[in-house]
Length: 299
Image 1 (spheres, rainbow, N blue to C red):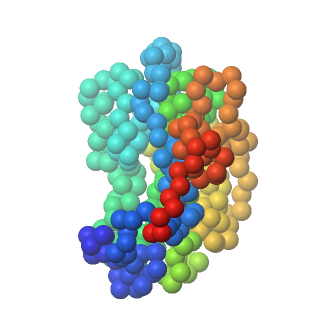
Image 2 (cartoon, rainbow, N blue to C red):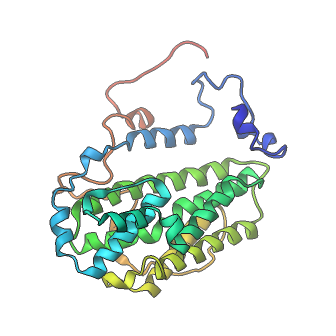
């Protein structure tokens, strides 16, 4: 906690939720129920790489044309650079693989995204400002990539990749929701509305450039103009979650994305589903479980 405090200003340290608590190693009583529930939701959402079947993806990869391969390679390059997600199942040529997996050095707009994120890690700005920025990293910087892979799913391509995309997009959605929830728990240091909008606008412009440059969605039959609109739609949703008004006021141009929400609508006939959660974990939150863990001691 002391290391954490070195990155907080005096104003930040006056926030009740950021104050060091000598009882922090004692679980009960739970002070922030909503945050506890979000933690349990994240715990229930744990998944492993072994649950993703990539066996048929190689066959699909061989059937893709050059544009589609270029597109998929660059999506994975961004994920590898941004979040350590490295998938060598696609058999990329070693020289190309080295280029792609070092995309933060080799692809200017990917470097721009990485630099923007790193700027907030080392920033002396307030906790609230950095929290909003990383909500943008989680909620906006991944949105174009996720949407484009869901487009591949809509076409029945790369089932292993697209299923892992469901799982990862759900995780990133949880991260974004948690950042917004934590921001809304701040009592004294929330940002002016215009400052929030300014940070979001920066992220939107970088993501649009990424979609049109490093990740040209036109290659797989998507429309880059509509993808830009989708990014604006996602940004508006984030702004509302942070307590702002909508900035772009656009509709979702991809109606099929409504069917693949981050909360997940289970298809009964699917072998595995992207909203999978570990059995019983959430029952302790909702109270509907068969077993109840209770403490009668006074903490």
